[in-house]
Image (cartoon, one colour):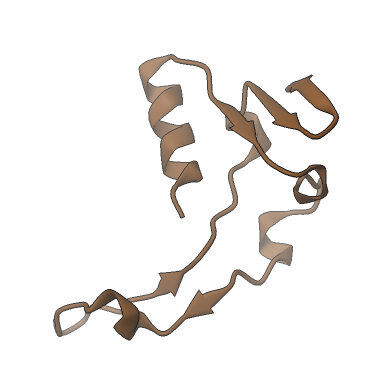
Length: 80
């Protein structure tokens, strides 16, 4: 997990954000259509704090609007 946060930080700092992934991971589907893989929160050894729900989500979804270009097995693709 973490590409989304990196993309937000890059946008905030005014630097381009490039990603590298297999082409099948690019889709025009909405993020709400995906069920993200989630594992047992105990893996993280979280402290027991009242009112805090710990989630152990393995992957995130980075919106295309934050990506400058991406690289896959077919080459480099400019966002747009």
